[in-house]
Image (cartoon, rainbow, N blue to C red; front, side):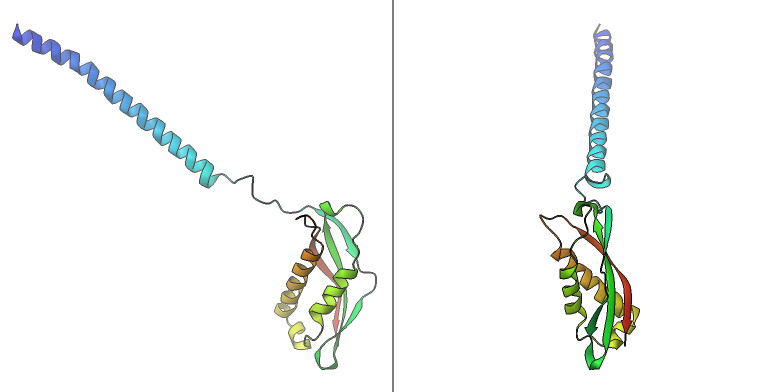
Length: 154
């Protein structure tokens, strides 16, 4: 009878062991699934907090080109237009401040600086940053680009 009791105990322990293994497997699957979901939401999925690029609005064009004194008796004839964002509305902005910023930016520069593409682009990007800041209100961007309609040095 002792042998029969041992066989019954062994048979009773086998289902307990398989239930423990099943619980461990289920727990591992749940943990791995939860970890994968957390990684997806934290690292892979783009957050809705990322700033969206502004939507293009109307273009405000400077009516007359301005003449700016460069270094060594040279000058720059500059005409430009500003690309507004949709947040700026349907009326063109007043370009007086932008013209003043352009004069400040280019006054005193040399023809050599403006004759290379790298020099023109660097000056244009710096001017655009100044104009964007000047026309920003309540953290809303109203100007998104500047287009040169005339750029003549002499």
